Image (cartoon, rainbow, N blue to C red; front, top):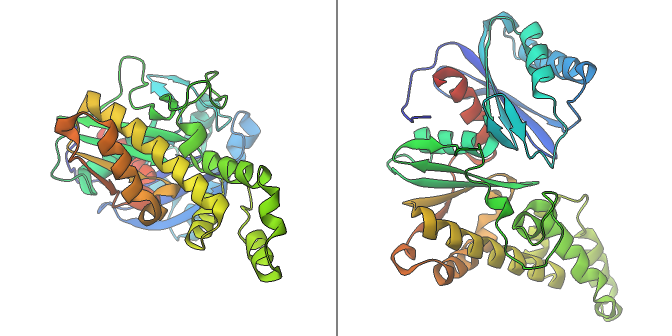
Length: 330
């Protein structure tokens, strides 16, 4: 995938399939999001479920006061390895891609369909019209329910021989550590994804019950108010960190050290001009970025120590924008 800003024609849908949510954006010719909706993730591995989802998309377009026949392209960002028609390593979602594409064709007969890895979609968008503009070599890391990365070298998004380039979530950061969905232990995703952060938070709390005995009523109430609402509720952990919650302090420390170390290893190999962070967790970068940069500098080879690590410009919309853009340039 070569990067270059191309004038898009007509309206396009960008779909970002995530382990917790599905983000959908209606994107116009200026690469602006006309309207956006977020759904809870659900299995998309049976035709009835895919048809229901496609019907939701059609209703979304109609509610935005557009004709579904006007949709000229649909891009789907997938949290797994993508090589041709083969999609693998999908630990966070249940998906039958061919059924989904068949359903989308039924509901949007005039649309060109395209799909790619979600991190590659984010990298494509950030490099073409986001924070990566002006850089030839970009490492884009998306952190949400899982972790992935898109690699841009010489202005091209690199998918790799097996579609697995950028699977940074499965870089080992803890020998013999937590069991990962990929079957190995100690993967970055188990410590620095939204779920990994929440898991550390809960484990620290469970292993230190004596701390709660010393809390007064007000502190105890705050501690319970700052409990994550679900397994991927990292935002509550980051809020708890800013309140000085000891569980959150430890969770953020483990997160930052794990991410900084992994980025150091990857950047020693790739030597990018810049590292960009995207996904839901990137919205709290002000909490952890300095620590990540510090650990990164200690972990990477000396010539790369000044490599900047920055939040992406496109936020949570990078993947869906990249998917919509890809439906135009593929």
